[in-house]
Each structure stands twice: as C-alpha cells, then as structure tokens.
Image (cartoon, rainbow, N blue to C red):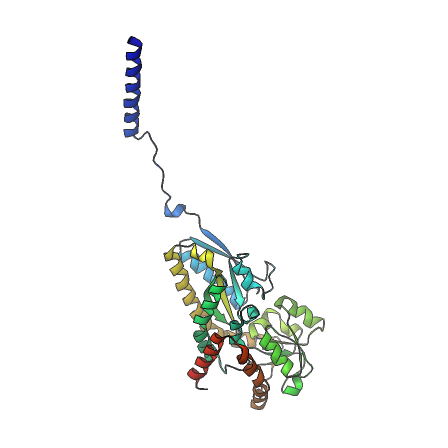
Length: 345
C-alpha cells in the first residue's frame, strides 16, 4: 500500500510540474512567418532582343518597378539577346507550358498559333503612329481574351516604329523592289514582299546580320531600332520609310504563375503594366527619329518615298488585306470594323 501511495504521489507531482512549466512558457508556441520572411516569387523574363533594344530596356525597367512596388515579393530577372535559346515564333507555347514564366513576344510573330494576332500588321492598314495606338487600344481586349486561351496574362503591349525597307541598292519604286531578297518577320510582311516581285526570307533576328554579310539576303523589312541593333550601316546603304506595317510586342506571364500571387500583388502588376504601356507608346515615336538619325550619321541614306510609290504599294497589297479578312477570326473583323469607323474610313 505504501508503494502504491508513493506512485500516486509521484504521478500527481509530475502532472502539477508539467502544468507549471507550461504556464511559465516551457512549451514553445508555433512561430508565424513574418511578411519579410516570405520567400519572393522569382520569374525569368525572356526577350530575344539585345540589352539596348527599347523592348529589352522597357522590360528591365518594368522588372525594377515590380520589385520596388511589391517590396521584393516578385523578383523578375530579364534574360535578353535570346540567351535562353528561343527564336520567337514558339514563345506563345513556351510561356503557356511554363518553360519560361514570362516573355516579351512579337505579337504578329506568333500569329501562326493565334491568327487574331495578325491583325496589327495588316499592310498599310494604319497611316500614322497615332492610328497605330488607336488600333492597339481597340484590339487589346480581344488580345487579352486570346492570351487567356493560351494560359497567359498580358501585362503590357509596346510598339515598334513602322517598318520600312533597308537595302543595298536605292528603292524608290515598285520596279526597284522587284527581285530583292528581303528578310521579313511575319506572314503579312512576306506577302507584301511577294506582291512586289521580291523573295521573302523569314529569318530570326539573330541571323539577319550574317545573312546580309554573306549575300543570302540583300534587304530587310523592319523598323529603325532593329537597324541600329544590327548595325545595318556595316552591310546596307539605303532606307525607304514606306511604313508597310507597325508591329507590336506584348509582355505576357504564365497565367497559373500569375494567379499564385495574392490579389494585392496581382493588382500591382496590372497597374504597373498599364503605366508601362502608356510610357512605351509615348517614347517610341521620338525613338524612331533618334534611331533613324543614328543610322544616317553612320552612313545610311534615307530615301523618302514619293506619294506615287506609296499609292502603288497600297494598291498592290489590296488583295492581301481583303483575302485575310475573308478567313480572319470574327474578333479580328470586329477590330478592323471598329478601327475603320473610328478613323473615318
């Protein structure tokens, strides 16, 4: 009985001791993570253009603003110059599949996968930079819907200056374009080149300079920033600003990755994207003039096209626009109709 009494006493002592220890803080509570302890979301952002290209510069600026505005919760590292090995036309699938979470994408360059994106580069649809902005604003809601189909969120859309013809020989008429071997960057550009009797070469940007240097091509359909990036003055002599098309790029993020962010952070990225889009459109018109002057200073001669030449180009490409509209997605036709109505055509 004595032993049993001692055992009961010992048990009671241990229970009371345990309660005292707990009351004094002996049981360590589970620590909650502080906001600053949360690991940041780290995204790689791809761009095929060199670091000094305005799209690459804009993407880096956007990444910096995102990091600051989110207090480091979203950390974007930009890989420029095609460092990740992507050429461009496959990027819609690349971001969709999460092979890279974020990328700068030439809109018309992925029209092979999403025909709606071809809308912005219908040849001679727009007649000024201002009209290009109008077209973008009308098309943007439709593009947002298309991007969702591809598991993506468009953060912002930024323009290129309008495309002209860069060549080894002077181009002042349709006759001068006949027989050229011209690098193009999308389907519509290729159709224009074919319409004037030249041969289109759909080469990625990374192969343009070497193809000019080796004589594979003798001309390029592109804008002034690309001419500077590729140092065209080393391999070409003339520039005809015929404004065939005005391309745009979109910066997209994988939708699943975007939706992992909390609502406040998502709203911050959307807000910064809108601000970036407005900023890019404002600066590109002036950029066009600056880049053309830089080319001129290095030896490129600008040959201003005559009204007759521009009219001939518009007439010879009429079928391209009409044929495209026959098979275009309904959304694309709506965009064109709204655009023509707004600009009075």
